[in-house]
Image (cartoon, rainbow over all chains, first blue to last red; front, side):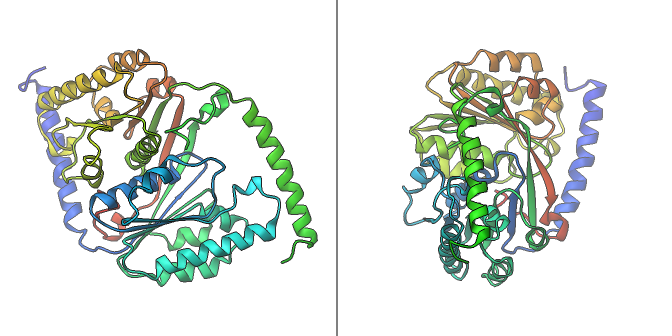
Length: 203
Length: 203
């Protein structure tokens, strides 16, 4: 393959058209604002993608707050890693175990309310450039917290603050309020083939 | 809401059933192996989810190799952050700009080949617990590298090594070979509303 192949010339021309279209598109994008981001769906990557954004923020020297609404049964690698950055990352792990591990709704509701109190404080503090509300969707799905309260808290945050809400079954009203919504769709999962959860991948 | 509501008793019973089913399911999952993980689709979170897994690995003291097949036009927050961990993370940024920014196929192919050489070395080194091949799917989509070579390289890696391949349009043969595939589906995107890419979120 050389630079003079006809296919290469076509390729270059097509790429030039794409680049020109993209440059025009980007020239229109002039606003910045704090985004409300939702990661939902049955697939993997909802929380880890939020943690990837946390890493981006840290790379830019931005402060991040994280509330884990549902605490995993296992200690996570992220939590252990982020604990190395106490000045940059504030983590509140408020949940009392996955919902399917608990059998006491009143206790779940109380834990959710404590988590929301922690989240509200972050959403009122402009020093947090990003707030991650991990698994909040699951809490909302079980009606552990009133949706209207959450939407009001999100709407009242500082103008430049980004929020990432994760978890399956994001409520429609939250999706309506969001700026950026990604659904993670499960295509193939190793649990189906007898592979257990492993460090670095699942936790 | 109190612990004696009939709905609470029903809730507890339902949760107990779910927990028992989950415990049975998890008891069957006994194998560990290096997973081939693919993040594809038009939605966001493909790379950031991979970076979240990198964070998990770092939390477990695992070494990680990353090859960026397509270098972004902007410097990323992740790259800046991960540069703080030179002993734990090896990053090779090999691409010469997004494909739509270049207009020279031969140059793109040469860059892809250099990136694959770096990736191959990581895939032959059991010291890397995880290897991230960021945007490899895009390179494959443009036929910059022969798919058979890539599949053979992936198949020949150390048994315990995890690999994460990201990018739109993952080839069917790669999906067939993968253990875990997630498609990120775009539900809503702020670029459509005139909001530009912002630090911490997009880069």
